[in-house]
Amino acid sequence: MKKIEHIGIAVNDLEVAVIIYEKLFGVPSYKQEEVASEGVKTAFFMNGPNKIELLEATNPESPIAKFIAKKGEGIHHIAFEVEDITLEIVRLKKEGFVILNEIPKKGADNKLVSFLHPKSTNGVLIELCQEMR
Image (cartoon, rainbow, N blue to C red; front, side):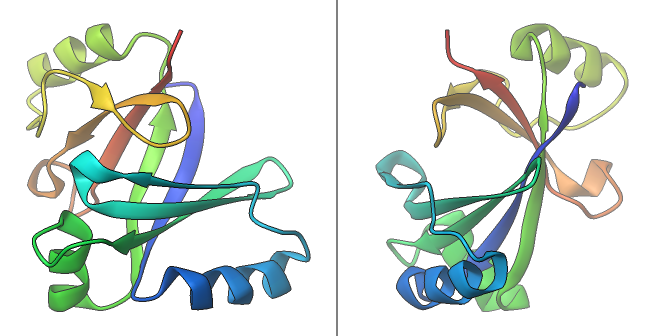
């Protein structure tokens, strides 16, 4: 793993959260998009070298809606940048981690993504991200 790619924060209302984070960071969101396959709308912010992703559910069955219903708004996942997501999935599976999607899928911000189950990572949802080439 190369570095933390971003921290994902689940929010009830993306528009309200964007205003809060624009005030916090003093800059506008650099990108907003919907990932229909995941049932989310996202907004991204840069803060120095760090990236924050805000996530709002677009339907009650999305993972974000379920997360908020169970735990409330807050940090949802930590994403790590990887050079080769397929090789990293194989490596981590051999190490005993539970992979939620062994075939990487298209995520937000031009990334291929895969997730590790929190039960195998001390309760933290881990996202692997590879820039789409």
